[in-house]
Length: 316
Image 1 (cartoon, rainbow, N blue to C red):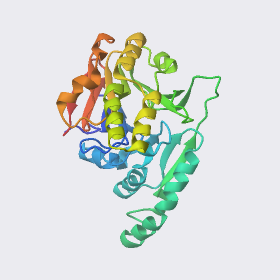
Image 2 (image 1 turned 60 degrees about the horizontal axis):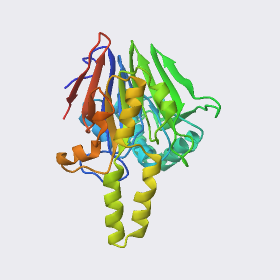
Image 3 (image 1 turned 120 degrees about the vertical axis):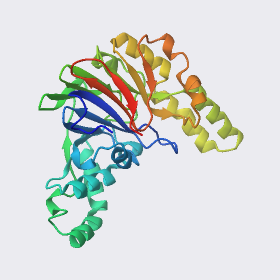
């Protein structure tokens, strides 16, 4: 199993959560760990993501910062445990930095308050040398991108540059994608979005585009089934979610127009309990993008060495 010390210098995408709000035995909530050299960053932290990260061999104590694409519950509901493990496993002396758009202060404050009693118990039990009080919780780093601007650099250190850009997930606002550049390699994360021209521009010539994927055809079947079962609220939700996500075919067309080298789907909607559903999920995506297309699974890692090339494998 690779570690931060053994992964080749360059960029790597480690999939610590490829699911969605729909219950899925095989997928944790949305989470992507990006390894840049010896630096470890996490983008979104859905339910179960800290556990998956640990099972992949990456200690939450090594996470240097978390970046949120937006504040939907499925993208943040694993933050509490991630921050706790970062603190307890590493004897952290400073809170875990949490980057996001306006409103990230409320998210950090809410989790800090929810875990305040727990932290007091752990300090009393293990002692401040094991769990230093100064290292508890999350510290927010809010950024803004003006509506008349498309992107902004939100982190730059140690040769790592992280650029945030607007995406279209209305009525959710703010909603961002991210581009990570390091040592001549690049990864672009779509976040949750309808087809986005801004994303296409920001993904230009990227080595890897990690894009959300929703199959309108499969979700349409679920909507119809819900109606037949007289579950009107659920049917309405299935109907509504199609308009602020992206189909695999549309994402593939974006990848082709942006000249990215490889496309990987995450935030998979709907669930695919058997592999036979992967074909219907992808639909005609391969007709729109000439590069390699993957459906990510929890535990997958895609390594982009600085020297060139790409390696994909599972750590499970």
